[in-house]
Image (cartoon, rainbow, N blue to C red):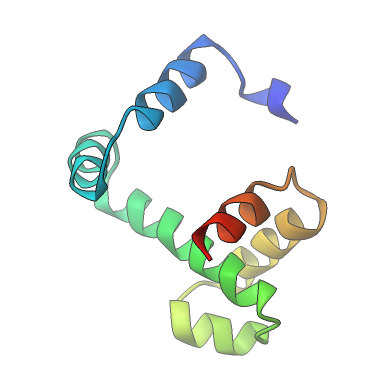
Length: 94
């Protein structure tokens, strides 16, 4: 799966993200590099993943996060069959 988007440009982006040192720097960088909607969508997906791991029903997740059932389903598919990225970060956030 990584081969689909792994390249020098993406490596540079991720290296830049790894250089961020605190929450304020994250806000500054992501405000410049993304639209507000893009950041909100990323945050929403992370919250959806968290709630799915808690076994919350789709309709409750949709009501809580505002995510569509299509988005919830996609995140659920990533949790079940993805590369483990959601699990990795959610475990670290505990």
